[in-house]
Length: 115
Image (tube, rainbow, N blue to C red; front, side, top):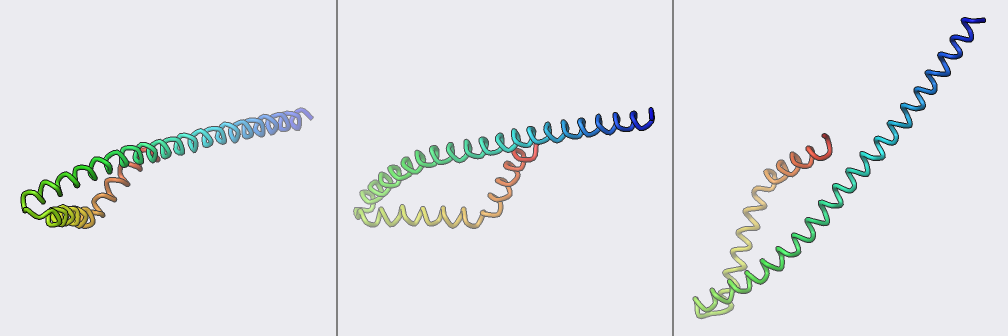
């Protein structure tokens, strides 16, 4: 009977250790998910705030540049067209480099998610 009691005791201890491992693993993954969610939401909020402020700055700079070019060309609409053309050129440049931007973004985000 001693062997059966020993096996029963070992099985009980193994079950308890397994349950403890599952509980600790569950808590770890809950914390990891929380960290990832807060990191991502923080990144999104900062991007929206900074992006909004930069958008306003670019808007005022574009209007100022269009007015200045309009005075230079003695034709205000031509100044606005020139600024619009510059923005189209920048847009085409970014569009042509989109895969490079994707690679940089994936590389930086993978450091955050897979460390």
